[in-house]
Length: 316
Image (cartoon, rainbow, N blue to C red; front, top):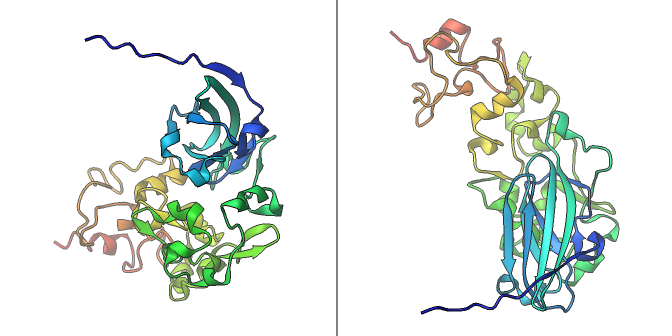
């Protein structure tokens, strides 16, 4: 049996970015890996919305059936970003045969290196600042409430509806898991600033750990208070809240330093059980303390030198 499907011929229209895409504006710099694109369609009936990242080839699509009625006038579609410039193409398909298209540039900032600073023409934009997106208050509460100090349950936090994704990884930071966002953030007229600079914020809670970061030899990121060079402050898919696997995090700065057969020929540095640590594989941190040490080059505190460290595993 032959079935004929009637196709609606779409009329493509290049829309003004500011009219169709409410957030983010073109040439915005952000620090997150997943960004919600907020589209304004008013009372027009849509068939679906597609966001394509031409820089990575990834595509996200939401049909009208997937969009909550309360969200319908300003539907949200997530886009996955790579570090650096991302060219996003937003296509909105209407049931009347019209398709509107907008292209916007978004720059994802890294925590270090050349991509840590937005290029000319791009600017960071805090969603909560200056009432810029006051229209969003129809659905979202953009200012914190007294109950946000310890919301019970966490889903009742003012921050939860927009930021719940921050707690969806395997390893979640304590304040994030309970949505006590005001532990680290301070609400002011410009939005939500960090309560203290650098590692001084971390040590407000991690008081007992502080001495372990102040031994004779201090690792560079620790010396400058840049905990976020290695750790994600909200949640992570990697142990110890790392941005990546242990060796991959080390490679970001130590790239090009050949660690095959390190420290001697034939010695593995990964993918083997660590004899000195139960249920852990060998990694850079099998021998080196990533924070500080009294033994150079950042050897673990249990050692008095290279040979004593080797004997931790090679006892015979």
